[in-house]
Image (cartoon, rainbow, N blue to C red):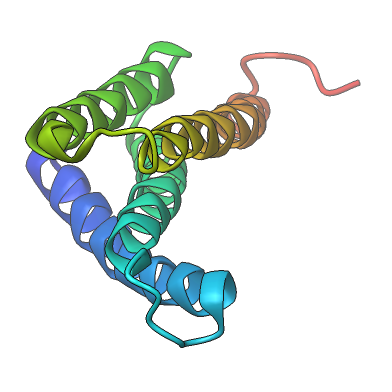
Length: 138
């Protein structure tokens, strides 16, 4: 699999998972009753689930292709943070006292899901390296 195919599969899967996560987050936030915050909550869910899915899936698919290092998931996470920064700048005119909690909460949730994805990616890379007999299995 080439880089483009791995990236395409990862992006499409993360978008699909992110959309499901967005609707799940909106439902869990206000039980399906639209209180006007659904867009903010859905964007947070989209970015958080999409970040986790993209980082872990890209790392997994790339480790199947060749030996990888920690730079692969770190680069994926950096790309997701860049997309979040662009989205934050896009919606920055809505940044007021009320929505500040959503902006800050969104960054915290995406950071947490990114950290969890990095931890899982580390495990994926360690298993791939052990499978290729590059490090001894203890």
